[in-house]
Length: 118
Length: 109
Image 1 (tube, each protein chain N blue to C red):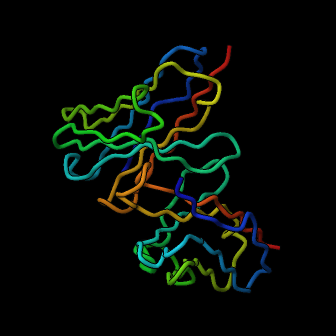
Image 2: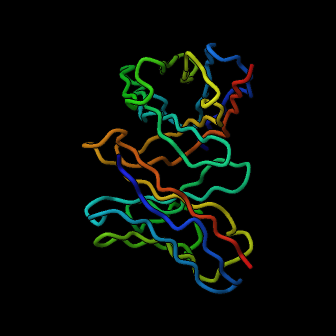
């Protein structure tokens, strides 16, 4: 069965960086894009970007350009999302989600809470 | 920017029907997908391509999309259907290309 298992919660200070991992299993890792979606406390869902594990190509939302990097490790079927220059508004639960390209997301990770606080 | 408008809340009695709308000009020309999110949990896909159901999703969940409004309908509502619901579209002419609706909290009375 498809599983996406994310790294644990993290607390960062403003200006720092965070790197969240998402380990995939139960399917061919390179056959599906992986997306990152975040959700601030009490708020809706916000798409951040996606990576094609097959060729490591990425597409980011303009809002996050220059601050986010998505990478993958095919040897461990893991994707990573690094967000830099953190501010309090980045406090959110970050989800990885498998993409059925180009349209929707069929499996989601359990979410990783990132708290940005001084 | 691209906005998909949903009612903030819908209340429904058990056994009745809940209808959640997702509005945008000419949304009928896009494929709409729906997610259910229970408190503290990740979203779950319940409808894709306007009206298709993933395996494991009850037939009580159905979708439609025409003109300026897409809708998710939950028939014979159960207590376990209480959750937030989000619509979503892909539009490669917008940034971001993946847009979620504003979300609807369904409360079972």
